[in-house]
Image (cartoon, rainbow, N blue to C red):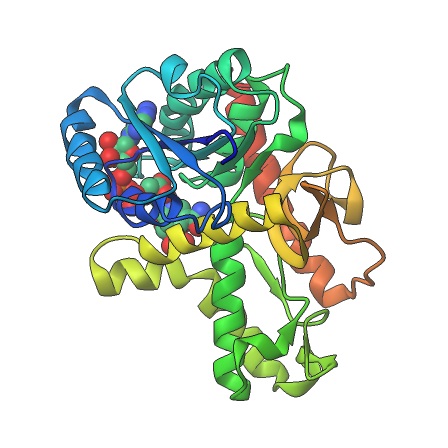
Length: 324
Ligand code: NAD
Ligand code: LMR
């Protein structure tokens, strides 16, 4: 069997961690023939809980799981890591401003970026899940100057999957009938789920739904789904977020023809270079590529620009805080 791939998961004792680790260990992240070594990074107070999760992982006797390491030291957790899933983050609390959250998370993602820079394997791929995911990914990336910038990505695959599911339910088709769905921009309420390039049965999805439904129901339902889950569950999405993280990394490594991921902009579609924004992407040879040549009408332009403006504001805020 091949040498194990080291997968580091931060926030391993949290809700998403609990939904994620067993699927990684079972082979769903990288493939049914790829052995994995898990590294669980937690804050000191949560190391014991991570040890409990590791005991349960042991109890599954997963054939592909070649070892588990648990630590509160990022330099250890990321040493030789091939894949890093940055899940652990501080959620916003009552009375906190956006700047406070960005600042608090800068304290997490800056040092983690540096530890990745100094210790990870040459082929490291990073997916940031912890919110605000796009800007946390930017902070980590800017603290890892020796790692190719494109290796830092943020998760909008959950938004993508939500969009597929909402559209499939509306048109009463299986999700497998839908092609070319795209989420543009930030993983936030400003994101733009685009039905003008999505196709169902070979025809443009936007032409198969009522424009008012698209504008007043579809877009806000997808964009505010995270808040709706929190309201219903009393906690933020966990299993669906873990599922999306699995989808993102699986497709990055193994290839896919069209999905959504937040990756560093190369200036495509008027998104300023360097911003980590969601695009229509394909993965070829283990690299994300932005799908080019799409026509963007005024309706879509306005929404993409609004979400990108928010990303620029976030970037400027973390710049002002000296985090990048
Ligand atoms: P959680 O509170 O259950 O778990 C977070 C874990 O991170 C905790 O165990 C905590 O101890 C740990 N942690 C905090 N700081 C850390 C650090 N410096 N190093 C290592 N671990 C650290 O939260 P959760 O429900 O698992 O969610 C995690 C994050 O994912 C949140 O920011 C949430 O908003 C975000 N999220 C993103 C998406 C998305 O689509 N991008 C979806 C769902 C949730
Ligand atoms: C989600 O989209 O479910 C998460 O980002 C949680 C949130 O705060 O919306």
